Amino acid sequence: MKPILLLIALLGSPPTSPEALYRAGRDAYRAGHYAVAITAFEAALAGADRPDLLFSLGQAHRLQYFIDGGSAHLEAAIKAYREYLERVPDGNRRVYATQHLSTLVPYLDRLRIEQAEGGTEAKAQKARIIITSAVADARAQLGDGPPEPVPAAFEVEPGVPQRIEVTAASHEPVVREVTGVAGTPIALVIDPKPQPGNLRLQAPDGARIIVDGDPVGQSPLDAPIALPPGAHELVVLRRGRRPVSRAFDLGRGETVEMEVELERTPQRWVAIGAMELATGLALSGAVTGYLAWDAREEAREIEDRVGVGLTAGELSHYHDLESRRDGLLDVTIGLGMAAAGLLATGLTLWFVDDPAPPPRTTRTAPAPAGDDLDAP
Image 1 (cartoon, helix red, strand yellow):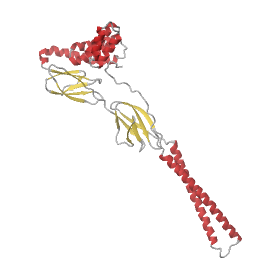
Image 2 (spheres, rainbow, N blue to C red):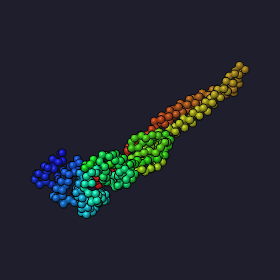
Image 3 (cartoon, rainbow, N blue to C red):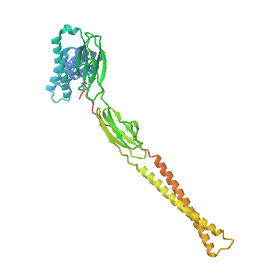
Image 4 (cartoon, one colour):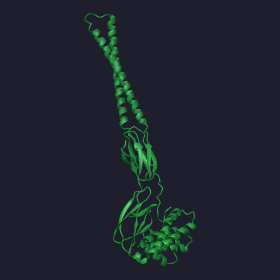
């Protein structure tokens, strides 16, 4: 109601700028008041040479037709689109205007033929179901009949449920059951959903897989990852490995295969080096420990002969063995402590080496094709 009151106020007041009239029409259009939008756009065009507004006028007439079924709106929409293409040949809505003409012109021709052949009395006993869709190249099928390009209108028996299927390339089909009412057109907007794409990923076993910020599991995956069409970001993580982030685009029904290799982090290499060095020190400590034990055993053999009597040379050798044993024990203890410290350091570095995911890359996906006034 607000757009209607605004337009009344604008038209009843002193001359209003075309820009204000356009804004009023735009608000009415977005609120679904297409008849009000038509009035505003026509007034804006009358007050300014703005051929770009012809596309907006065509949009409003086209949608109003699907509400009240008045063929005058269909003819006005075609006229507005054609005039827009003629006056703005390089306009940024050229593709959409051409697309609408490619469906509306044949539709109007069929409608005129039906009216000429059937007559109004026969039509009065029928119900009309009108199907539109924002999906390009969508086709509607009534029952077992042939698919018709959308927008499509079907004459059906009133009160009888009708099966309508809307399909489009690389989209999931949509099936609706509709019952027509005599003398009252029913307009339905049916937009098939795009088929998902699939990401087939090969990554090291045990790697965590994140897509668009959401965890999807660990590799190896049992099946491809189903994703909606568009721009996506893949992150693969594993403890002790550098995280990998890749951006990719996925089309409708498309399968993308990707292989990811994860390199060791510097911290993981340090951890491995520390544990290998700890192992080397431990082995060295085992050797020095064995040598200390061997010196101790040889010294005990000399001790066992004390009662028999020892020569000066044997006594000197005994003291050398004791001194060697003590020195080797000190080295063994030092090597053991160093090995334990390095092992603890290596294990700590190993288990805390769990890199965080990199910040997400912000990418602007292309805007989907639309039918609004602001369509590119």
